[in-house]
Amino acid sequence: MFETLSGKLSGVFDGLAKRGALSEADVTEAMREVRLAMLDADVALPVVKDFVNKVRERAVGHEVLDSISPGQAVAKIVNDALIDALGGAGAVPLNLNAAPPVPILMVGLQGSGKTTTSGKIARRLAQRERKKVLLASLDTQRPAAQLQLAQLAERAGVTSLPIIAGQTPVQIAERAMDTGRREGYDIVILDTAGRLSIDEALMDEVRTIRAATDPAETLLVVDAMTGQDAVNTAKAFNEAVGVTGVVMTRMDGDARGGAALSMRAITGAPIKLTGSGEKLDALEEFHPERVAGRILGLGDIAGLVEKAADTLDHEESEKLALKMMQGKFDLDDYAAQIRQINKMGSISGILGMLPGMGKLKDALGDKELDTSVLKRHQAIISSMTRKERRTPSIIKASRKKRIASGSGTTVQEINRLLKQYDAMASMMKRFSKLGVKGLMRQGLSALMPNGGRPPGGGGRPPFG
Image 1 (cartoon, rainbow, N blue to C red):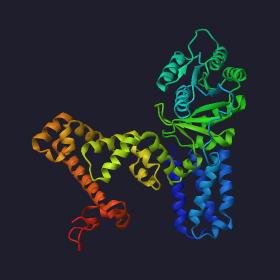
Image 2 (tube, rainbow, N blue to C red):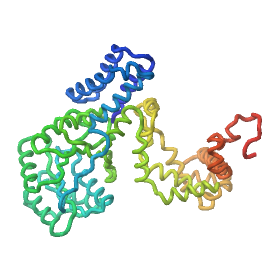
Image 3 (tube, rainbow, N blue to C red):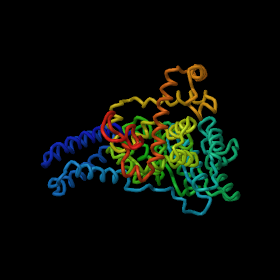
């Protein structure tokens, strides 16, 4: 989402780094480029002005102009200013400090992803916080909206309020709170109706529901893809009903990112959660420092570790690690690795969380990294017998033809897979012989064929 802004800011810092010592004119020119980059990314004009003034004020001080590496010093100031603009370091959790059932009011325009987000939050609170959650649809405007939320509740493993035809949104909200109190629910999520645009009827309805339920959180759901319109929506809702937090959906889209940078300054409310897909587990806490790091190409290692912790099968990973330590590695293990990679999501999304990988992503352009080879490898391995997967050395010409026919691939692809497997298996054997201490002493090159030395080089290889 922030790729355009990230690319332009990287260009500014690269230019500053080449100049060595900076003059005030250099900083002024760089700030002009930053200003243009932010405006192009659809950041609200007042936010851009405030941001650039803050950065320029600090950048023309002695700490930068007299710095040994002024380009890095300016980048650090911009990073700090980005974190401030996004709401300050650290995620802001949902406020659940109220007597149960805690009401959470979901507001926003139609099509922003409000109903799906309600299901995602319900699932998150039920699974992570071990809360008993009741979902209630107050949307009597859109056909089948209440039924949609009931289906989402079932998928999320939570309860939905039974539908009673003819009730008004306020009556549904009051019934939901009453049910929550009588049946011992911890959280009641109230999904209000949206409109295609902001109108007084919508605001009056939300105000009435808010007065009747006194929610601990009023979460505004905005579509990041709508750019400046998302900022205008946030401003209108905040002025009308008061917003305590923002949830930004479609953060995996190709929007310019300006809405996220503008949201805190315009509403005063923090972005608390972000959605990046239709799946019910595609909801994340918003960490301003991590987003700033990704914008400036510094990566998001903490986010990557959390993503791995949430998605990977730890028991399977431990079994695989133990086999690697013992120098054992078969095609079943390789297939397990592919499954783990697929769980992590798109490869380019993972790349975006690694420091310095922005330029590689730029080189790829709009293309997603080709992961079709992994799917073909899965198909090939699935077409093998258990004995073939555990002892690949028995796979000769006739077996290759049978496997190729069963997997819809070619013998050449099977040869490439087996060659790749041989290289990985050899590395695992070297690792088991070398051990962790040996690896630390000799470095990763010791895992390479011939100890990392070119063929024909002098000296005895470590595993001769």
